[in-house]
Length: 286
Image 1: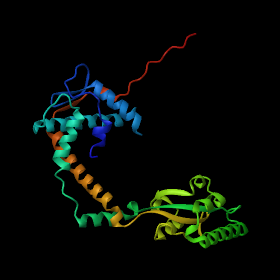
Image 2: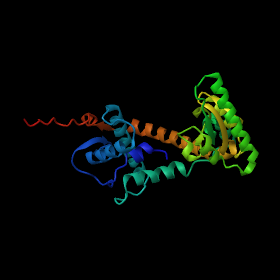
Image 3: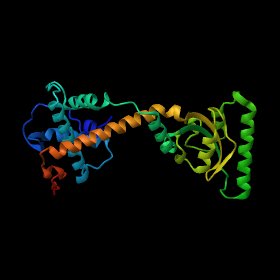
Image 4: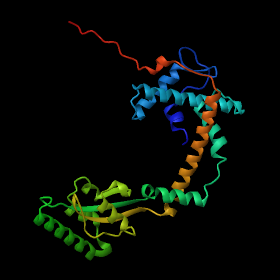
């Protein structure tokens, strides 16, 4: 969704009714109160990797709350009903859906092709399982040869069984990759840059799900790779690319709107809120 920071990390479970007590920021004479700040801070501290004892991270969060308030005020100015039973988040979400999502045009074929070509290496993924045979002494000519010959014998046996071959049983019997052997050698989906080059080249050279590679040498040993999933080609990736283009367009529109709203707004932040609270030291009993 467009505003993950504003609507998830900045989410507050209270309604938007006017609060009381200490406030942390004021936007066009409407206050953001401490309880909304504290609820948001608690939520992001659970789900985000940011360190919210850092002033920069706390400033980002308070700016998210300000952005949400600006959009809330904009929604009300365009006659979206102010219903005290709704969360502020719900009003902002509905405003964004009405203003941007529902009015967005579908991406053109040219746009889709351009994104596909530019981001092909990041978008395309395959899924594979593998059998790994390691030389007993890496770099030792005799041991390397023995490991390669063993891998080639396994491959020959696999191919002799044809369509009846159970790759996972070969993994359980032979593979020396402890990280994948318990799941049948499954490496899940990966893009080219996720694996070492010889392995990626071999995996991406496989054309059809079920195809098995020749023996492939990497720094880890000798691999036999089976293609088990395919997310390549523009037709497979079209929905993902369309979604990306629509989200990018919508984000750009929201960013421009927020820039305009901020330029016209009167905003005050209590800077002391950005400083993390320091717990008082407790004296140890003698």
